[in-house]
Length: 329
Ligand SMILES: [Zn+2]
Image (cartoon, rainbow, N blue to C red; front, side):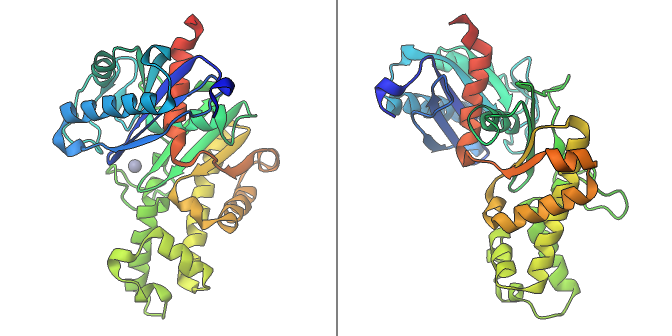
């Protein structure tokens, strides 16, 4: 974007993941001016990790061509568990050893900028609301489909954080109570344990063991059996892969309908690696939603793929900084 088109004030968004940090400078209209990706090196501990966060932030500002003084504030999206009001990580399973960490204030000191902490999935939902597939809506639900299922809810411009920083943890809503699968969180019957990319692969492995019928999936070495490979086998007409993808769409529809009946949003969005499954997968989700939701909701709530991809997290985190610090401009 040319300098003339940038609309101040500017915010720095940083999206902390277990493997990578993504960061970027975002303008007043939610448009990224830069995008940087660095390794988190989470296993080296929080001190190195926070240095890497600061480094990713500084690189993003350098790449944007702005001066450090032009940055109004910083938004940090992080995996939980967390205490948002205190800016603390509590016991994040994806960041082993980062327990009871005042990450917001440590980063604020390191960067010498006012900083706000948000849950990563909430930040991604806010990014889509502000500048992505939900930009003309007033309320949305976002499911992020990856190794787990992240979820964020934005209603009338407000992120549903909950009273204890864990509102919108809808990857862990219960969709099965009998003979339920175990979720990565340890609970049973949670959506994530059925419909994440990891869960899809696990269900495929189990189905291959149980059912001796021929399948393209048998020809794939165990290490290469990914959600993408299952989707490709489904596209090639493999009956088992098709059934697995169809079931996954159904589980996601159950999750979406639970949220539709709770929030009644304008739009439900899906993002993450699994949306590579394309328009037919989305259409299957829509079909199942229509069969389960209140007729009014089935008719009126839009169901779409998200638009910002892997940038949603840092764009939304910058949006959180705008919400927290923008009014003083
Ligand atoms: Zn769970």
